[in-house]
Image (tube, rainbow, N blue to C red; front, side, top):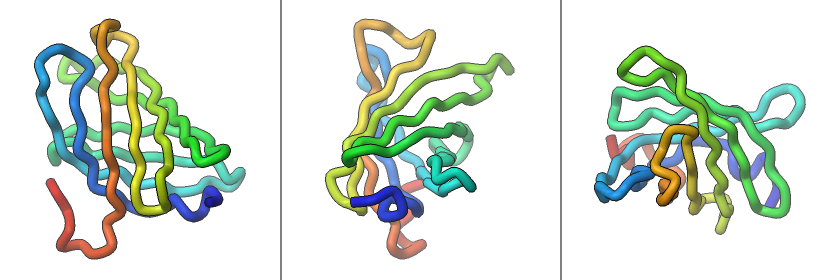
Length: 119
């Protein structure tokens, strides 16, 4: 698999980085910049946008991300995805102020048809 194989849009299902067990759904869009680095945009629950940039090697995708919280403060984190195929990514993530006893988790499934959106 190469970096171009994983570009596109994905539905995501995830769990937050805490003991609550709260799940979320959203979308992830992966594009390449001029230097063949990944540019990522998440839209969580149709309301929270997160952006990030990262790199891909040996079917592992690493993205540093940020978003503006409800308190208008910026939050930062990192997500690591294992690219099981060009259509399925499985990952874990952590934010700087998340509960250090937990990792967030995400599963991503390629959107092949706009009717497949989970939001």
